[in-house]
Image: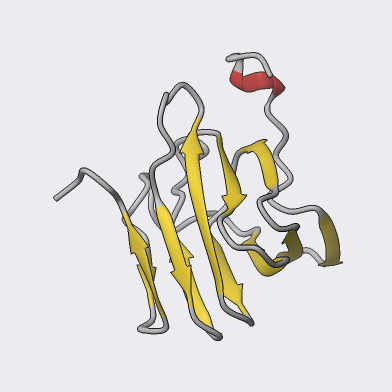
Length: 133
């Protein structure tokens, strides 16, 4: 994969399961130890984990894998991407010995924020940024 972000796919999942003029719903299924390669998000979105999972992310250009998500069933995350630019391209890998699936719901209307805002989530999991306070 090139470091040129224009070549990074925008699909935030492996299967598009629903789309209308306001939302797109994707699944992302990762086999044991599997990875979903670099992609970027252009829309505010919700991530829903129906079952437990543990994944780790890496941003394009970073040497190390960083963010870790520990999901219990029903873990929900929300990300305001903002309207100024997409999120930095990133990839995700499954840290478990079993297949995991989560859903990504893209909100296609313009973001109410011009800039990216921090992740928010419910209490059914953790979103950890190693090395950040």
